[in-house]
Image (cartoon, rainbow, N blue to C red; front, side, top):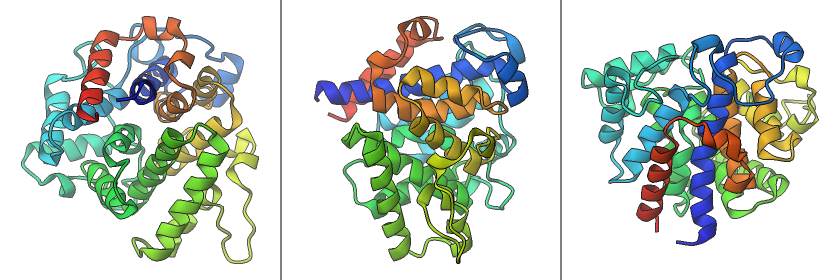
Length: 324
């Protein structure tokens, strides 16, 4: 276990949780409201009336995934953790579940009734919220040494517990590939460009979905649609980036914030102030920014007020031991 690796695990998990907690008090607030009242620090109460440093379902389900990875890779065990979270407040910040997405709630109900994990998630086009993208990051530490085909299969299975449509799966896959590149190379532009190349090559050689689905990711993957020349994501204005709970919007917003900003703090605050699904956008962006900039770049004053920070630290240490 290298010190660099240790920092990466801490950076990823705390990166998600701190971003999540920053966004919780202003979830559902409009961009117009946040333009007038921008979030600049960790605050409390607000939308969900929670203490400062409280993280939501985004981090809870992320930590459930880590708990599974600390033992044997077992999707049924992960499903059990999800049910335990939903029914008994397992891995919640203060012993209470709040802010659960509809698709996630429905899938966990199916899991509680014994539906197989890979069959529980919604498969229709309307089931493309960001509920699997928000929790997928830790899988990068499990798949990092596997072939891209195996990485895709595992990401597909883990997403499918709650979100089984190919759009959500592809979003998770692109995100994990970006995280993998950031683990290997601390230059965000090189990581992004390499991600685009790797994903496009994989999609060219593996018929996992229709061209129509691939085209939806054109701003991220840089693919022209017919004769239509697309504007690269990093050239988009803020007005062209959306903070909604739609998985594609969340993926674009997280990448855009990462590419536009130059520190962890700047990245997550930019994500929060996009408005709407503030906690999830910041959690998704925060995980990548944590890996990119390192644990020491996450403001200590934010970590100090984070709920259950000692438990998160212990979780990081256990994942380190498992991935030595």
